[in-house]
Image 1: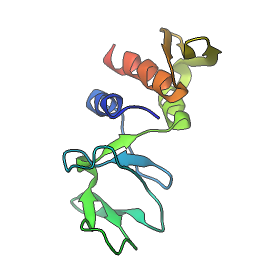
Image 2: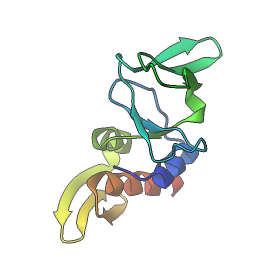
Image 3: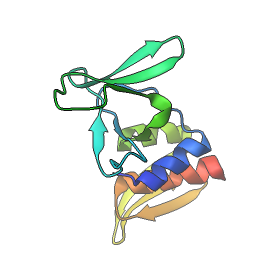
Length: 128
C-alpha cells in the first residue's frame, strides 16, 4: 500500500480520483490517520450532489461520522489504478533485490512495495 504522504503528494500533483467500489482512503487530521476505509456499496458509498461528491457511511451503527466530502479524504490508489494513471508511460514492473522497480519511458523507480514504486514513478511523471 502507498503511504499517506505519497497519496497527499499525488493529490497535490493532480492525480484525479473518481471514487468507486474497492477504493481505499484515509480521513486525515481527525485522529484517524492510520485507519484505512474502503468504498463499498454496503458500508461506504459515494453520493453525487450539486455541490460535489459526498462519501456516505452506511450501516455503521456505532459511527459518529455519517458522511464526509470527498475533498476531505486522501485516496490511496491501488496498484492497477496507479498503473492506469501511468498510462502509456508505463513499461514494466520488475521484482528486484530491493523490492520492486517500475520502469517508465522516463526512467525507473524502486521501492520495497510494488504500489509504492508505482506511486513514485507517477509522482516523477506528475511533478517532473
